[in-house]
Length: 436
Ligand code: ADP
Ligand code: ASP
Ligand code: MG
Image (cartoon, rainbow, N blue to C red; front, side):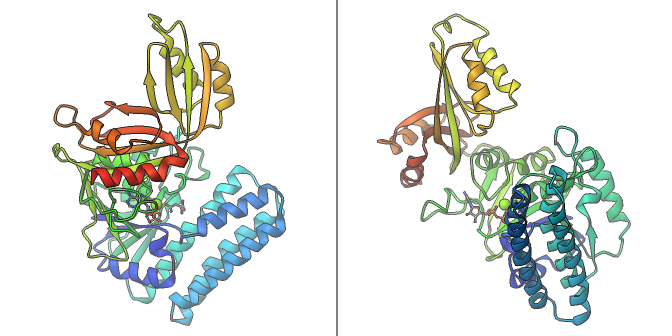
């Protein structure tokens, strides 16, 4: 059994949906995870924002535009009147639900329910299309099995036992469809796995069902060696170690959700990144393999803030770093990079929502300064310190670009530098030019 996940652009139009159906058949009882059609989750976010602001006409207008889009999709996707009516009813229920929120003050629970509708529409439409093609597909409603624990982690045991039971109850099914991204939280409310979270859904399902492989189908032929949105001439990397993929995903390679790597890695299930638009391309396979000494790819993580804490008393002052870390822990803010010296420590964070309070607390331990609008550039590969000299190559490539922090040695897989946002594209291009 395999898990195949199709992202927003892969189901982004009726033609693409038909193409996905071609790719998933014959079904072989595989599990197919669908995202919302591209643009839909953004529209749902917009609707929620209007509702929070009490801008009812704004919300109404976005709902109407989204509904027109889906009415168009139904008529282009489905050929028979009977199935069109069925699809219209299902989509109609969803728009009735969205409109019900026009009459009440939006709560967080309501917002989560609104955000869930995109994935629900994708699976409803795909199921109708498969029915028309005579394929026995069975829907596994994510809200019936995907559950998170109090801290937001997936409840793997519950998910596994529920899913297996649902699958066993459908012995004639050729293929299973399910929604990515959406789940229930520990108190049973509708929730989600954060933006881009359908990849995570696929990985969780792959892990609990002990799948043969997890396939992430998207709009590009695998993980490229640099960010194709900013650098020309990037090329797909054929193999990545789980650790390398985790570094790249965490440090900004959008093709993979950062949480997606861990469940697959823990269960040793290969993850294959494939291109819906070019299905014959090899893509990237992510698995455990021995060190190969190769440099793989570069990624960038935006909107980073650097915080420096200088203390005259750091010399011989054990416990200083502990106090610094405790401050971040108290504010539930995680640190991305750090650099230490005898007189101070610098750290970087991407979540600055608690920054003012953190800085206030840190002032108890030294002089604090903050720099915003930074970006972490991360060079990833099997970069063992004993075998090669990747660091000088990276630094030479970045000649002329001011570097605020450097980090290597946390793992063998990554060298990170912190530079100004305004230097990001220049840095990415220079690294591609010199390293590949
Ligand atoms: P989906 O909607 O299928 O989940 P995403 O938009 O989340 O797709 O991810 C695919 C996009 O990731 C690509 O279109 C590409 O622009 C972007 N991307 C960023 N960095 C990389 C990279 N290193 N390799 C491949 N794609 C990348
Ligand atoms: N539809 C959700 C989003 O746009 C989840 C996903 O596509 O993975 O973030
Ligand atoms: Mg994605």
